[in-house]
Length: 212
Image (cartoon, rainbow, N blue to C red; front, side, top):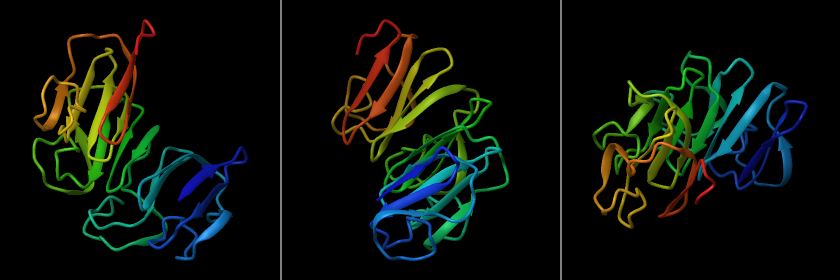
């Protein structure tokens, strides 16, 4: 499925909808964009495998769709949701990422939060316990960008350092081995990383010099 926000702030989704990941209150598939709700203050949206999340003006975070691992961030409630549900009471979201069963979000204070499936340590909490509500990653750290693969996460700090954590069976964490990391593990010693992107079982990043 796919979603997009238009210049007027309206939100539209289309495609497969068996878990309500299109957010229109139904589970009917759509072959063309269909509007989600009546709000016109959406500023960002991202799609996971079977769920979606978005940020509205004011920084409130909303998620909908499949929720077996608690990836919608609704606490003990793990059932599917066919309409957007607000995640917690905090405001100030500014960057989102979603994968099949987990999410990550940045806040304006450069803190990083994640929730959902944590089977390979992809939430960076030092364990493999799922989280049904967002938890902070690296409380003493400040982040500027986050990207995820299906079971791993990488993020750039405010100081230009690159950290990755989660599944590492193909070396996608860039740490020189194939051991999983349940907490953020620094990649090399460089502190001029500008951006990072996670693929299925690999990762790419760009340094300030433009080197890839």
